Image (tube, rainbow, N blue to C red; front, side, top):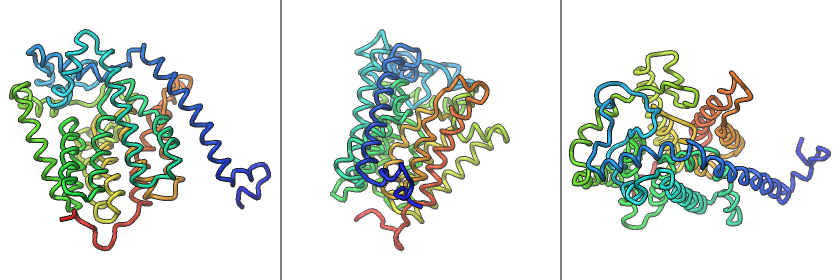
Length: 393
């Protein structure tokens, strides 16, 4: 039975009608997203995560320490405002904003949000055009679908780094798809910067090695080392020596109501240390299998998705990075039914009216959506050719 045989639904067989419906729905959702941004700009959530980068940058400008002494002596929860959790490089990168807005991180977050929105738009337009996601006239619809995605709005509000990571990884993918001289270096440098900001993109470097893109992997590692050394005149050596302890002492979230990390879900059944090992092994296994058995676009999407899912702390707005694998899946992992389910499941949302079962919408469905994206890429993604192409000479 087709739509054309069902009374009242036969018009849905016409592409023009379906497109009109999508335009109307997206317009309504995007209008709601604008209202959300305006509402949250006056709430505590505005710049909540960015406050940590701003504070760390301010400490650098004033000759202080970017890490709290408590982070160096015992396990601590990552759920604290102003608490800096990342390598020193990010604090250095944010110093211009801290210098411009020394008294108010909320104003600085406005600039940060504008930068994030521009980066996200450029990645969506660039990747969708390069991969042929829809026709040229569909660019506005694809862009609208990205900005209707709640994790993207959450990133703009909270001021985390994931739109920056989206830009770096999206730019790296565009460089990898370009065979002109020098693009392998560009891709590696961008992935290296992403890893230096937040450790989990290092899994993409593993993917480079598995795909035989050794030149890009070398550039990534070289960029990490060079940029770390370049920050020492500003940070000193101490923060870089402290960071391994800061990372080792990072404890599980105390409040798990908003936590999507598979590690946290699994730690309800087994010790958290073992949960981290299990999730890391599964993530690495998925990347290794995809690198061998799936096309390069699909295996790259798997690497990006797995890098998010293995993070020990994973919140709803972190899923903004998954816009990149969603775009690649739209082109390389048909049909779209499973992808639509994953996209909608990741909408999530805090529904207080649901009471004790609100976690199903707020926490379970987004986790399922992200995992479904990974599974769908592995199952539905285009297969690798008989001899997987390595990096061009």
